[in-house]
Length: 282
Image (tube, rainbow, N blue to C red; front, side, top):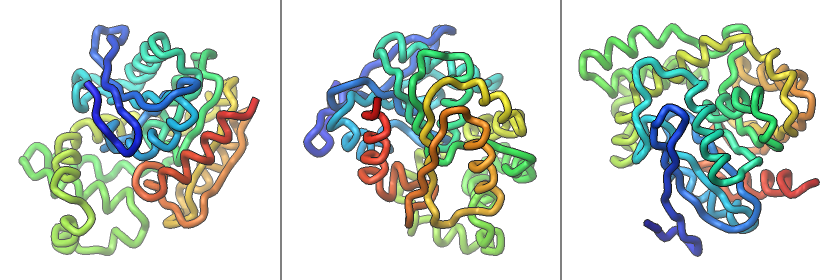
């Protein structure tokens, strides 16, 4: 099956992971193979513009992570090691040694690269690494309670107020409800609601892996660590600095004017150009 996007055709395929779970992915472009790993509350189609731009010089495979679209379920006992196994399965099929990870997808990519020497280069856009408790967890209990009560929007608001810029914590809940249609159209809202349980499991993995960043000192891949300077938070910027010091082969690149969603929503073509240049270097 193929779907048109700009001048490129995105083809859909899938692979079976080690535990038998089907992992779907979208492919576009031609050239050396690249694997894109989306973050929490994201789907493969959300990276269509980024993949199309990078696909001018690379064959870009965007994975549909567990619990999304045509991929198999995540399961209540989910662990990040399952995503790492999914990456290996996709690598075996596509030959990709170049990996792009966004947010939680960046954490997956780092965890995968720890024990996967076949990953040659990593491009990470604001990876979801927690150092010294920088990623909060106090939102999780009320979030889960709202999910159990069938109140997904209240759960999402709890998440956004905790994880967004510091000023968001001062915005009343009723205002969030009123503003939501302004920032998310109906299809995106439906996508977010469908992934709220997966989002909780994934953030529990971030908390479980808090302060394990020294493990990344053994990564052999070359790493491009990217972020945007818009809405930069004091709790996460030191994480990226520490991560850059820990990774043996790392360079940093800050893109002016971009926020956490620069890679998929704000300026995917710009970010794709920077990553493409990094991947093209010998």
